[in-house]
Each structure stands twice: as structure tokens, then as C-alpha cells.
Length: 291
Figure 1 (spheres, rainbow, N blue to C red):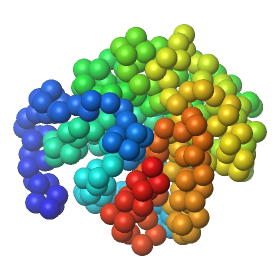
Figure 2: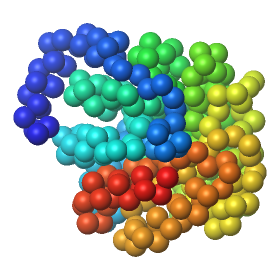
Figure 3: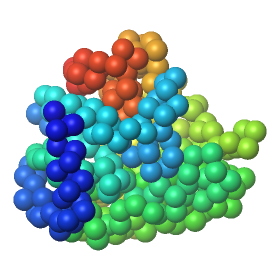
């Protein structure tokens, strides 16, 4: 049980911080970005760094780090799960726990746009940079790229994302860009989840940087998904989104999106780590079955 390893984990962090780099150097890397099912199945866990700790009707679900790590290790051990997305603190814990062998590891790069803050659209790159991702022998980096036409801070995010795409491509590393058209409603940032907005976001994101050779898009499932997926020739992973009580309906929407030619996998976090019935194994296995 992961609880039995907590003391060792904390002791290692306190007394042997170099063990993280040692574990990264020894990690068994995957042969491909795609698993045996021909897709990329990623478990995402970079929400806490933006202060986004809720899952479904549980406002502080992700606040217990040991519980989160336990759920992550359970999900990563399931057949067909071949990737993980996270911030340095989480990925380094997973490295020390030996949970990343053979997995596609993607470092989350910009987490400065804290959820609910006045500066949320000024989404600074406060996590991984391309140099560190390469040094850790990870497979790529991910950016959250929200675009609010009424907020001047969005252009800074676009420019920073373009730099990140360039820096990753220079190192032959995957650049996973997650774009949204966003605006404020009653002072809070809300993503516009319509087909037109998602098509526009995908078109903008696909053109960021001086090359798109290593760029993949991470797109939400919206109505008229076939039109969204037709907006780009870049590989797309489907974003899982929020926890929904009707999980069968969610899976049906994912299945439909995955049937599109540009779909190359799933990147899901809270929907699988904190499913309504709290059965992580069944939720993950059902998602893998869609591939």
C-alpha cells in the first residue's frame, strides 16, 4: 500500500533530493507515444497546481496528496494506460514510487493562472520548462492556452506558448497544447464549449511556434465534434473534462470523438481518478476499452 511508503517518500525528499534525478535517469522509457492499442491514454493530474482541487461535488477532493497518489498509481497500473501528465511535485513523487516505468511522461508547463483569481488569464509558465523536461528524460510538455479576446493578457500566453512549442520541438519533444476560447462571466473565467469556439481555438493553437511537427492538440468534447476534429491535421487527444454523474453518457461522447481520423487518444484526470462511484479501476478500464 502507498500509505506504507509515505515515510520513505518524505524521508527521501528531506535527506536525498538527488534521488529524484537518479530515479529519472533509471526510468524505463516507452518505445512509442502510442500504446499497444495504437492510442495515447494519459492520466492527467496537474489541476492542484492551479488551486483547482474539486472533483464533481467534492470541493477539496484533490487536496489529500497521499490519496491522489494512491489513485494515480492505481490508474497507471491498469492495462492500456501508457501516459501521465503532471506538475513537478506530482511526477517526482511518482518517480520515487516507481510508477513511471514505460509510461509517456508529459510535464505541465504553465500553472500561473490560478483558478478564480483576478489574474487567471495571465497564465504564466510557472512549472516545467523544455530544458528540465529534457533533463528528466520525459517525453514532452503540455500548455494550457486560454484565449480571451477582451483580455490583453491572452497575447502574453500565446507568445509564451509559441516559445514553449519551439523549445520542445528543438529537442524533438512532444508539445501538447490545450486551447480554449474563454471569457469572464460574473468575474470568473469560463471556457466557451461550442463547436465554433473550439474550432477557432484549435486553428489558433495549431499555428503557434515556428513548427508544428511535434505539436499535438488536447481538445474538449463538444457538440458537432466531427467538425471540430476536421479543423486540423494535427494529432488530437480528447480532454476528459469534469466529473459527470452520468458516466455512460460521457463515455458515449468520448467514443464518438475517438472515431474521428485525427483522434489519437484520451487525456483524462478527475473523471477517472474521482468517478461518481469512486471505483477508479472500473472507470479506467472502461475508458481504455473505448480505445
